[in-house]
Image (cartoon, rainbow, N blue to C red; front, top):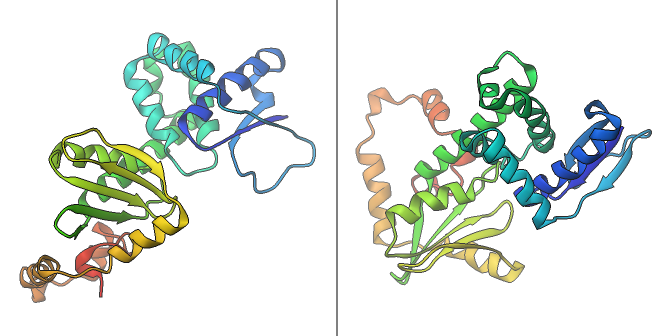
Length: 254
């Protein structure tokens, strides 16, 4: 068994799929497995091959997906690639094996275990992105910049940023993924971009979340005022807003 490993970003995944596919044409798809790094435990009788990012290979895979399957399938693949599950890249690979045979109709083959797993990851990423669009809370810094902290399990930062870029185009804001120390930065009336944060930058931005102002107090007061004591149902509340998602939500912070 040949195990091809890559960094957990979309470009590296597409490169890894291209490289593994070349090998599979010689040894068979069942002799190839893909995995994102870091690899936690090496298997004894498997050959591990690290695949570095290659822009040309990435473009070839993307072009093949769009032309031979569909644009809709490409969107679904992109969502799955944003999953934090270690088998996400292998799930995409198994999906493509079937998709290049059946075309866009593969999206209807939900009884196939590989396709079912594909859509399981797709739903998990889509649902989490939807949750964090709703749960994102911004803190104002000197009434000039709005800063929001999130800790998603999957890589949904760009999905959330796209939502707020459409709704807050004329504001300076930042959305920070604390789990991965990534930030999307949106200058006023400009396009947003993503960058890694250094450790000093990250800790400084963490301190901003402790800021309290009149709007913070007003929001908490509003949250308490609209609550109906007789209908208090913590179990239902946990279903709609899981506890692990509340860490950076203003109304739940002490």
